[in-house]
Image (cartoon, rainbow, N blue to C red; front, side, top):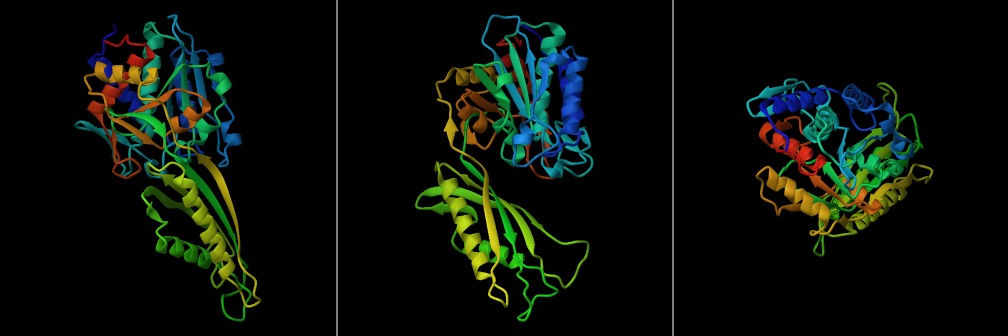
Length: 398
């Protein structure tokens, strides 16, 4: 059994603060991926054991780079395990300057500290570093550092699984609560809505302009009036919808010109009602196409909408009595936490389970995720870091 000392706590806190300071929003993960790679190489991982896949080339969102997949040979005759966390953050964490403030890590720059998910990356990475540095007994390990989790878990969806080495158990770190085990993913639909109108010098009864903001406004108002925007409850089914990005055409500060192109990205989620996300997405399609048909110019020409489901995932869960669930419970008990709290969310495990992997999720101790006041609870993060080492060594953490 290995020790967990104050020195270990200091090291893992220094590591997470180092990672939090590196920018890396979705589709722009090159710098954080290079940082993780450099740390691994500095601590004895061989270059041939690190693979960066081309998931970004398959993703509908594009991107700078793919996932990092690291294979560490085992020194125990046990089935392989996969440990994972995502590298990307949301934009409110750009420019983070992490500092310790009592039992929290906060940002001195007025941003969030990106506990989601730099804390997960740090926990997985530190477990691997201790295994390598101290020669701890461990099964074969695969480390998976994914891209684009925040925009539909595209990295996990398109990961090159041939490089995984067939792990029997997969443990992912993401989300806030360290005493909760995530055992599945909820259904989610990610939509791209391309609205085309007609440019004109100005908008009026005698001009051929077709305003795309008018199409957008009509569609969103209709969806809201019908109860399909925000929290959605229909006949006992629950879900949610959200417009994520609205991007209009135009150059500089052009005035008196009709906006003829608008790109909208939106999502629909089911909340305990499998398949409901697809119905919500279908209502979005109908609303935008109907709004386009009703938006006409003086010639009787209407706007046009191209509606694309960029990605869609089904609700999936591992059984409560699965071996990976029992092992996660063992890790929680090891650090003195009660088991029995389970949840289903919108995390990378929702992409891994349908691909045939027994995957669960563990929290990292963050608070106010995706907000400017996001912070990391140090005591909780230290617990999850111990759990990561426990799972990496199949129970060698003391």
